[in-house]
Image (tube, rainbow, N blue to C red; front, side, top):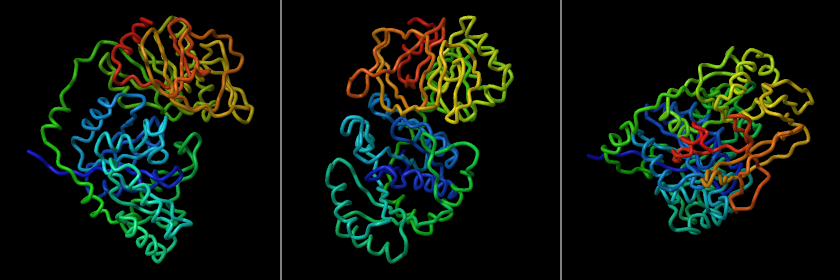
Length: 442
């Protein structure tokens, strides 16, 4: 038995074209129609998926052909799209931009999953010049199905008329546009879209969903991106893989610690019961066999994290008693002796690691990473502005390279049974790595 659903990937010629704005608008507008909408995100980004989840009401899933295998990407897409009426994937950077040429690009994922591509083009200062741009993207790689285009920052209906003429000559179907409108603009972000106080994202998403259907042909979009799926796919992916283990796993999650991959959490859940806790709001660490402190924005909540003395003491006591711990980026910053903000204020942190961190005079560090850890390859990425100061720790003998296999300055540190690094790890298909990590077999 088969049933029909739609799926498509939102991409663009370059960054800052409006991919996230359009994606959020589509997710909520389709959800408002009563459809089950499954969001995905190309690449390692943590922040866009948080907004996707808000807009769609379902957890957004990362698809990354650098950090994981093609088989894993296909399985993730099949599993999470199986019960959806429509699957919407947001691309990363420009359509063909990858870690090394097209490697890890949105185009690579579109080809791998046979997903139609909908381009979003910034038309703010463009009219007929859209024709050669669209023609080039449509014909550069015939394996990629450019199904249509939606224009952003369109000033008037007559402006859109010129753009439609360009589409006709380029052979790409126009599906509508988003107008210039300050009520649906998304502010720039700290390491991406801001996710904390000061911006009402629910209001912005609601406004986007109200405006979008007035100028974008949603019916046509769903029609040209329709596919047939076998109902058995849903049953296959709904089966439980393994009986969970007995470990008590505590994971930090609140405004300060938000950088999590759903697939990583699902892998951890095979080994025991997961308890979420907040270093900001809770008083003490839950009973724990393994503590995971992911990345996030501790620098934006440094004072409040520092004021929660009982939690800092609870975490420090656990780590000092040789509790098994993994701290990534923001988690490392929380375990350090102190954190100095961009404004120069310094706040005590948990004091587990023999270092401090600072947001001052720091430059952005960004890129994919490959760690050769005890003869096992584990991939991930790095993205931060802070740096280590007063660092008295000795790094583990683990070679870490970038996507082009050039060795980086990234390090992994160990104190007792605590591992800490600026590297965000992706272990969703590396059960043997997680097994070793939980037992500290490394």
